[in-house]
Length: 254
Image (cartoon, rainbow, N blue to C red; front, side):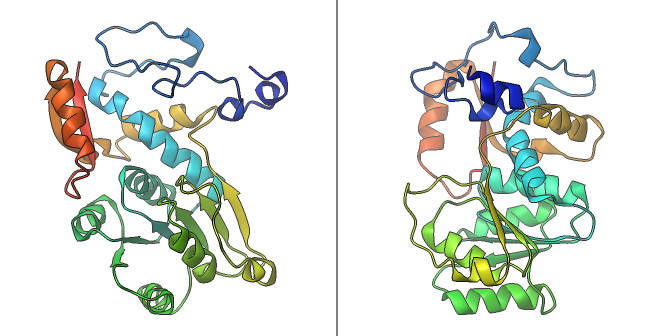
């Protein structure tokens, strides 16, 4: 590991980090896997192995919400209702956000995410930027979100996130889109917006995610749309790769 990054305690930023299932590192889809003990967390008796597996995406949500400094009373906009957007909603709601608006193009996912704690769900399909921003403000009683979690990576979504954020607010870029995005930054200066990135998760995020699940504050099992046996792994990947809008997370039981 890079000694500088490692000393800072931000292992997720180290260029030499070994991350399972990120080429050239193989994944760990097997019944038994040997892992460094200092990177493991013992599950309490009230947390199942399936819940333990779902701590990975939940930890991404924990990291993003921490980067946004979400706390009691915040109004939050989550752009994208995929698995990570769902994780962010779960964590933001647990952190005390009073209003959580979610945008997406899938009506199924928008309907589903309201069961996770989102207070408003807006379909952005065929909406102009001005119309979308107006609808978000109306949902929030005329105000704007002071915390924005952009989880789609889409260029237009990043642009809208900057336009709609409340002055002095924080925008966290969670979704990985194109390497270069075109956007107007003048509003960032005038409104004194803070824009930061969020990459995977770092020290403490897994422990926080586990605490949320073990305490019952977060029901992460809701994210599972369908389960497969290990022997059905190929079918599971094919099913997940179909990109069905009615699928959130696919679980392979080992």
